[in-house]
Structures are given as C-alpha cells and as structure tokens.
Length: 186
Image (cartoon, rainbow, N blue to C red):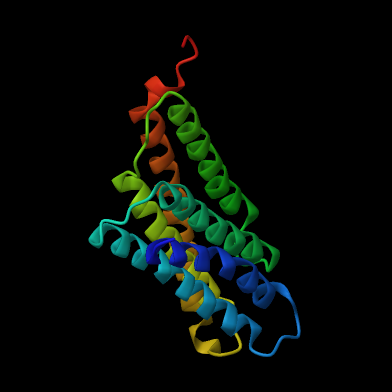
C-alpha cells in the first residue's frame, strides 16, 4: 500500500463523510464542510496520480481503485445535488450512465486481455465534472453570499451543460476507439 494508493483510499473514505455533511440537516456548517471535503477529495485525485507516476509506483490496485474512487465521489455529489434540487436528475443520469457504460467496456476488454487506458477526453471530462460540481456546491451555500447567487446559478448551469456534452463525447470516443472489444461475433 504505497502513498498514492493510500490517498485513493482516503478519497473513498471521504465519500460517506461528504454525504453526511451534504444531506443531513442541522449539522452546523454542514454544507460548508461538505464543500471543503469535496474539494480536498478532488485534489487527492490529482495528487495520487502525480505521486504514482513520479515515483514509478503505478499498481494494479491503483489502476482499479483510482477510477472507482473518482466515480464514487462524483456520483455521490451528483445524487446529493439532485436531492437538493440544484442539478436536474437527467444530468446526473447521463453522467452516471456513461460511467457504467465505460466501466462495462473496460471489463469486457480486460476479459479479452486488453487494458483501456484513460483517454484525453476522459481526463477533460473528469476535470469539467469536478469544476461543475464545485460551482454547484458553492451555489448551495446561498446564505453566504446572496449577491453571488445569480452568477453561481448561471455558472452551475453552464458547467453542468459542458460536463454533459464532454461526458457524452468521452463515452462515444471510448466506444469508437475500442469497438473491437465489444464485437458480438467474438
């Protein structure tokens, strides 16, 4: 269990803590703490990848758990934002469905002995999703700055729309580039 893998596990551990602060009413500064936890957890994604590559500590565990940790964090945030009526359910559904579809594709490819690496589109997708969620979480702090509410509301809508578009493009890109992995006649 190297440092990069420990950071991935910390990100997974932070998901339920984020959810508690995000959706349980009555916790003092709960929304603020949830926002900070999400940002910190998001930063661990960048950090664990950097550490694994720079120290040549890329492991099979990390290859499996790092994307899973990302999916858990993004899914938890999207579902809680839907529950709070900040993000429409169809946005969350498109993003989550793409994650299931690409994970399924990777599973099929792995069964055939092929590893599907993260694409440029996939990396951009993750960054845009994280930015969109952070903006939505800041918008969720409406009481802190009412003057910023219209700006954050518009930015949430713009970045969520961008996240959906990039998510679809990324999903299509994975399937087009790896169509041989899912041929029915195999």
